[in-house]
Length: 85
Image (cartoon, rainbow, N blue to C red; front, side, top):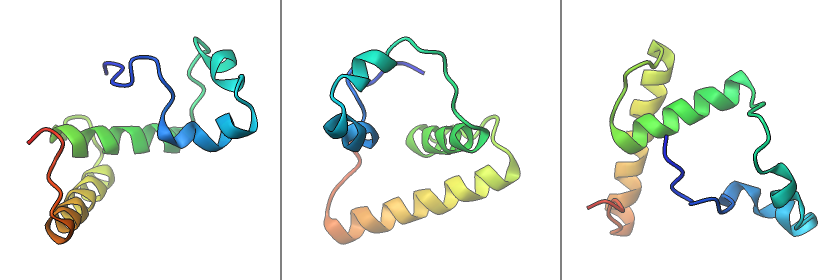
């Protein structure tokens, strides 16, 4: 998966960065030690973003479908559209 942030930190890292700004540089180029549940979340997130469900387990497919439906509801209720539209 390409690095959409172009090497910049993600929003999920902001609390850690506030507590220790140097942690971002220190964590760069470290091996991926994410847990299986984190990898599941990454697969589901990518499937929702791209629409590609290849490689998902049946459980992950159901979660991706539920997330897609929730995203559509949020877009309808807020008037926002998908960033790629």
